Length: 412
Image (cartoon, rainbow, N blue to C red):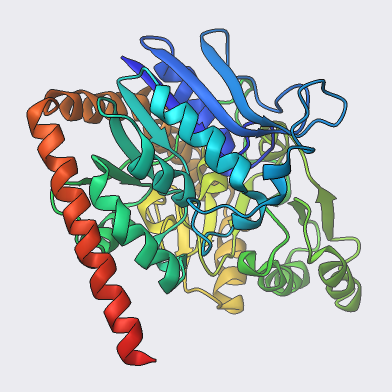
């Protein structure tokens, strides 16, 4: 199969970029795979696509490049195809509208995969007849605004499939979006095996990683670790990542007198060596669309103490076997779960071994196998059946758009 991924910026760093590279590399072992980045802002990507995956871009934002597109008049004009309600809208323009449309109308591929809602809209509206159209959801439907949901409902019926990273979100899509004829499948993100020895459970470190953003609730983790430190002052916490809450969290650490126990380590890439130095991983988010750091920690042999927040942790952690799930927002429960593992060396190491074993299901080869099956089945229904589905999808999408527009008028 010739598989083409369309991504916002393949030259940056982030969960969607990382998991796209993981999947593309694995699929590239058997298929013709390319990653097409809308934007390019640096000479070399952070992640390695591997020798068998082609990487290209549509809009060059490198000021030192002879093909710099920042001076194109269309770069300053607003986008009309990319949804205005999508979070990245301000980065898109009439130039991206034109370049994406030209790319999709000339694309010779069996499968075209979008990696965010706005790009899925482009694929649904502009991909030429022939390629199977797949839209990936890397966040969750519930995190999108009502305006964006309406925009997606108007065009998603033209897709052949929508994939989510959790079964919970797939159920939400099936129940709320009503996409007849569109396959809605949950396929988790993939995480490769680390190229190092797993943690042995003897280091007295709890490790957390991710953006220092409000949704991650590191304030809860720090308050919980204050309770941990009272009972076990020999254990310490490392938090990896950067973000808007750095100063606030630094102040909280100082206020609680934890400057010798809790450390803001800044971003780290790769993270595997840092996970392997620890013995327990902690996740205290109020929302996780999947939980990449949970899987990354488990693949390094760490049991994970996580809040049981929507949507991913409960689909990754086998509570009491390879980690612990605790109520969201409960500082005492977080502290108790951490201390339970800290005070029981045998249990901690047993759970770490279980985490290592159980997380193998997220290996890129296994996830790629699930995508291969999906893609093959979608190709198998092509031809006239596929054309009829898309024609019906256009009619259904138009009906949804008209209904939503009428509802807005009535509310107004």
